[in-house]
Length: 178
Image (cartoon, rainbow, N blue to C red; front, side):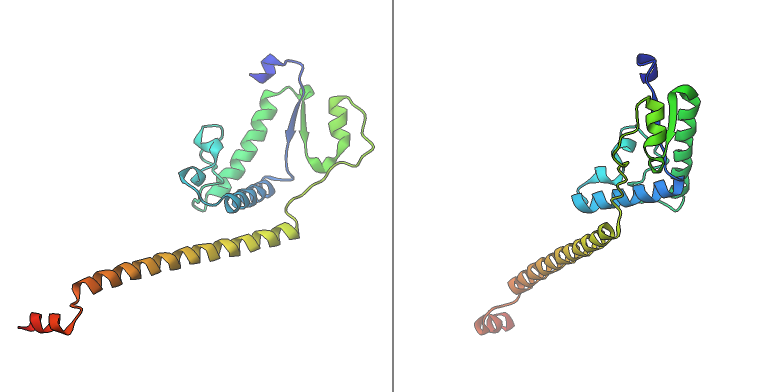
């Protein structure tokens, strides 16, 4: 639809070095977001794009699924690339990996290459991985703490219930025995 509205627009399809690195990065990102936001409801059990039909439900990175999910997601990734290549005319399409830098991007857009180096930003450095591990530990401690509070509450309710059924004084015991 957009190609018909903008018939002279150029299309840039960003890709990774392969489908498997894309899948691993996407899973890390969704795991990171889930840790940041907490598990706050039904909507997080699926990706929003999947829930609203923007992406095929066969690849739902947010869902805790069976072992075939990575295979289905890798297939969907390749299907998407093939679909874009099939729909967009080759003279309007650039299949672009950010590792290629400014050269192919500027050539496709018909602009000069900037003097600044191409911004290669990878948020999944060792520091982020360590931060993620710290957050996972903190989340585990929160869950253990919540569990302890629930157990303590249940014990208090049980103690209250048992104490109500038990006679409190010797006079009550004698009265009950007679």
